[in-house]
Length: 135
Image (cartoon, rainbow, N blue to C red):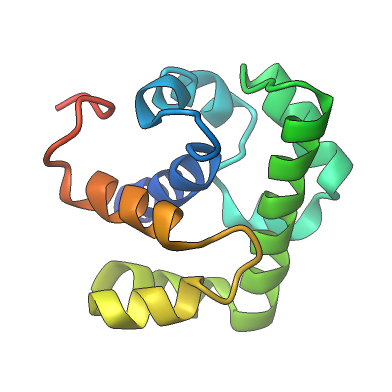
């Protein structure tokens, strides 16, 4: 996985985790520990169960209580199943080079990804207008 690819997956997963009254800034503050838990590697999301993802979220500093952490673990597991069905390479191609409409079309089919996640993802990808991501 290239550095650019890692950034794309980080941005997407951070955007997924930054919903339901949880800011990008707050989620981004846990990026180093989430990296150590290998949560930004799409192959891990393909392999791991929702329970394993939940354990890693908690260890990575993203513990929003049992219900919410389980909800977000399920969403990341859904992303993993989506990546498995579409293929990592195809997802990366669209996420890196696709037009906004193509990215939206791809991602809106994933459980847990809606307009708010897309907005956060595009914000992180353009790296403007937010103090969440260090410049």
